[in-house]
Every structure is written in C-alpha cells, then in structure tokens.
Length: 63
Ligand SMILES: [Zn+2]
Image (cartoon, rainbow, N blue to C red):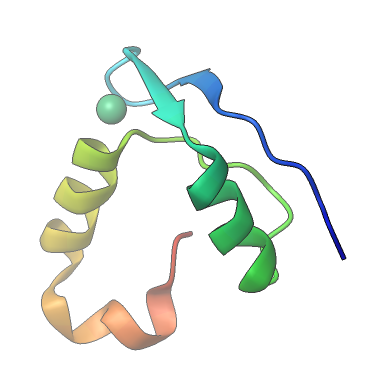
C-alpha cells in the first residue's frame, strides 16, 4: 500500500495554462476512486463549479 505519486504538470483544457497536479491531489483522486486525471486547473474547476451553482456540490464531484 505504498503507491508513489509525483507532481505532474498538466495543461488546462479551458484556459490552456499549465497547472500542477500535485502528488497529494493524485493520492486524493485515487482515494476517491477517480481514474482520470483532472482536465482543468483549480481556477477553472472552481469557476465551473460556481457557474453550476453551489447546490450541486454533493453529486457533481470533480467531473
Ligand atoms: Zn484553467
């Protein structure tokens, strides 16, 4: 149970900026059962979430 995670640099599909997908976030992703890496940077994820409304926080997740 000693998976190794390394910080990764990814490109956001929304703003095309590079963002860091940290080892800690990767671990969090795996714990939550997500298999696909995030496509958006934190700012775009948050912006998208806000656009959809706070009420969907529970069922929406990261997708
Ligand atoms: Zn972005």
